[in-house]
Each structure stands twice: as structure tokens, then as C-alpha cells.
Length: 251
Image (cartoon, rainbow, N blue to C red):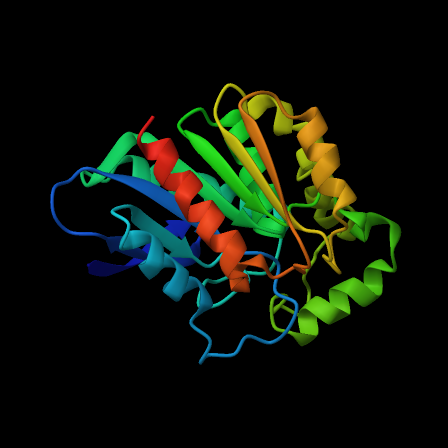
């Protein structure tokens, strides 16, 4: 396995990531992993996404993990419209790698990153398949106390600049744009996998059924009994997702 640190320049920001290549005969199918919205100050010792990337890479797929703007070592502030642009830049980067098989460029998204994955894939036909974990159908943030949400994001370090957002109305518009229920049907005829825990404490499982009903074929829905929101830590969910991704590469 070969790993490579990557920095993408976008809108004057640095978007950081790591590329995992399985070695052997290239080009490889590739999976871009899109993390969710952080809920707490990150623990530097936690290797959740790198461990998942290594696991998928051992199955013969190239993997790219990265930090959306405002998170990890990437620059900027948390902004959903910016996250859409970040993922497009990631797809551009992967599309131009000589090691990548362009016919198999998959997205694997978690929670907020799953929502971004659905919206981007619906409009970018370079994406060959999409797997989502705990994907919201839409964001409920718009109906809550916006000030408290912003202060929470500031306290965990994903809103970093004192004067951000410059316009709360424009910042909220990003959440309106990232509305998977409005885009999920446009992923068809490319394959879609929706994975959700029936005990999800953040995104109710009913939202998975909403997305499934709206999606076109081919589509699959997997409800994980007893699982909560952090499906990345659920062995059943990850085994299912990895097997599904491998099957898409054999299509």
C-alpha cells in the first residue's frame, strides 16, 4: 500500500487529504470518502477514517480521504456551499490521476458528507456510484436557533474567523442547497446505496426511507438493527458498504 499526502488549492484555501493506492496493476477503482459535520473537538489520536481507508485499499481500491474546509488541517470555515466546491475539486483531482480508473469513481459519504455527496453526484456524471451512511434528507438546522448553532461550531473549531459568516442569510442558503431529497433521483441510473441505523440519534431513520422512495433504480436500502449515527464504527455497516463498493467495481 502506498500513501501520499495531497494539498489542493481552492478559492485561496488549502484542502488537505491523503491518497491510498493498493499497489500492483493500475489503474484502480477509486473511492472518495466524505466525512460528516464534526460534533466535537477532534481527537488527534483517533484514526477512524485513515483506518477505514486502509481497509478499503486492502481490497484493491484506491481511496482518497480529505478534510472539508473548516475541518482538520484544511483552511477556511465550515460552509456547506464551500463543501460542495471542495468535493468538486476532489473529483477533478482524482479524475486526472493516471492511477485512477475513470469508469469507477465512487463516493462514500457520512452524514453531512453524505448529503454533499448526493448533491454533487446528481450533477456530476463522472461519479459512477454513491454509498451513503446516515444521510439526512434535508437539514433541520434552518428551523432552530441559528445563533446557538454558529456558536457551537465556533466552540469546536470549525468556524474560525471572528467575522464569519459575513452574511447569516447566505450561510444558511448553503444548507438549503444541500438538500438530498431534491437531488437523489438524479443519481439514477448510477447505483446508490443508503445505509442507516434504526437507532440513529441524530438523523432519524425515517429520512432514509424518504430518500429511498425518491431515488431511482438501481438503489439499495440497508437498515442496521440497533445501530446509531456513527456507522463508521459499526462493523456490520462497514462490511456491507465495502462489499457493495467492490461489487460496483466489477460491474
